Amino acid sequence: MTMLFTLSKLDLRRLLCLLLMVTGVKLTRNTYREELLLLVSFDGFRWDYLERDLTPTLNDLAKHGSRGGYIINPFATKTLPSHFTTVTGLYEESHGLVGTKMYDPVLNETFHRNNTSIEWWSQTGQEPIWITNQRQGGSSAVIEYPGMDVSFGGMRPDYEYSHFSYSVPFDKRSDFAVSLLANGSINFAAIYFHEPDLTGHQHGPDSFEMNDTLKLCDNTVKHLMKELKKVNLLHEVNIIFTSDHGMISVDKSRTIYAENYLNDTIYPHFTTEDNPVLSIWPRKGKFGTIYCH
Ligand SMILES: *[C@@H]1O[C@H](CO)[C@@H](O)[C@H](O)[C@H]1NC(C)=O
Ligand SMILES: *[C@@H]1O[C@H](CO)[C@@H](O)[C@H](O)[C@H]1NC(C)=O
Ligand SMILES: *[C@@H]1O[C@H](CO)[C@@H](O)[C@H](O)[C@H]1NC(C)=O
Ligand SMILES: *[C@@H]1O[C@H](CO)[C@@H](O)[C@H](O)[C@H]1NC(C)=O
Ligand SMILES: *[C@@H]1O[C@H](CO)[C@@H](O)[C@H](O)[C@H]1NC(C)=O
Ligand SMILES: *[C@@H]1O[C@H](CO)[C@@H](O)[C@H](O)[C@H]1NC(C)=O
Ligand SMILES: [Zn+2]
Image (cartoon, rainbow, N blue to C red; front, side, top):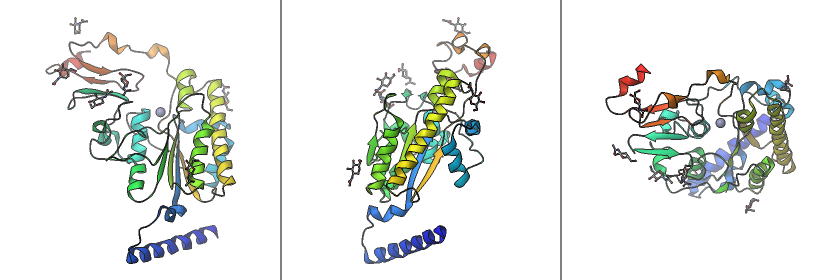
C-alpha cells in the first residue's frame, strides 16, 4: 500500500516537473521534499560489530529495511580518503586523496588533512554529492563530514555543523540534521560520527570499551529515529548507515619501525603516521634501492 502511494506521488511530481518546465517556473527547494536523504557514517564500524547483540536499533533497521551483505572499502583504508570515496563515487586514485598525510610530486608539497586548498580536493574536477545536490537545486547540510570545509567551485554546504569536540554529545549532530529536515531547509544531510573508530584505536576492537561504544552508537541511532518520528519524518527520509573501513587487532611483536630502514638520503618523502599503508617516494635513481631493504 505504502509503496503504491509513494509511486503515485512520484509520478505526480514528475508530471508537475514537466508542467513547471513547460511554463518555465523554477523548481523550488520544497519540491524535493519526497526525496529526503540522510547519509550517516560511523567511522571504523567493522562489519561484524552488528553481530554482538549490542545494537538492537541498527539490527532492527537492518531487518526491516535492507542491508547490504558487505561493502568493499577502497584502498587505502583511511578515514578521509574512504569517506571522500563515499561522497564522490570515485576510487581514491581517481579523486587523488590517497592519504591523510601525503606527498604530491607534481605540487612538490605535503598534504595535511586540515588543508582545504582546492588543489588537493578536486584534482580531476570532482565534487562531493552535497555540492552536486545544491547545483541541482537541492539544499545540503554537512555535519562533521570530512571535506565539509572545502570550497568546490566557490560553493560550500548550505548548512555546516563543525563543533568538533569529544565533549559535544553525538545527539547534537543528529538534532541539527533533523531540525533542518523538519523545517524544509534541506533535502540532504551527511553526518559523520568519529566512533567506534576512536575507541578501536585506543582500546582495540575486542575490548570492553568497544562494547560500550557500540551501545553508544546504537543509542545515537535510536535518538535519531525518535527525533525523526517526532517531526513525522520517519517514513519520509531515506537513511543510509555506512562506514569507511573495519579494524583488526595486531600483535605488537609484528611491528616494523620503518624509520630504521628509511632515511632522507634515499627517500626524501615517506609517511608513516598511523597508516595501514606506507607511502614512499624515492629520490631519482634510487628506486631499485627499495627492494634491497
Ligand atoms: C621541492 O620542495 C623542496 C622544499 O620544500 C625543495 O627543496 C625542492 O627543490 C623542491 N623540488 C622540486 C623538484 O622543485
Ligand atoms: C595543518 O596541520 C599542519 C600539521 O599539523 C600545520 O603545520 C598547519 O599549520 C595546519 N594548517 C592549518 C591551515 O591549520
Ligand atoms: C595547503 O596546500 C596548498 C597547495 O599545496 C599550499 O600552497 C598551502 O601552503 C597549504 N597550506 C597549509 C596551511 O599547509
Ligand atoms: C531551520 O532550522 C535550522 C536549525 O535549527 C535553523 O538554523 C534555520 O534557520 C531554520 N530555517 C527555517 C527556514 O526555519
Ligand atoms: C563484547 O560483547 C560480546 C557480545 O555481547 C561478548 O561476547 C564479548 O565478551 C564482549 N567483550 C568484552 C571484552 O566484554
Ligand atoms: C641512510 O641509508 C643508507 C643506505 O642504507 C646508508 O648508507 C646511510 O648511512 C644512511 N644514512 C644515515 C644518516 O643514516
Ligand atoms: Zn575511519
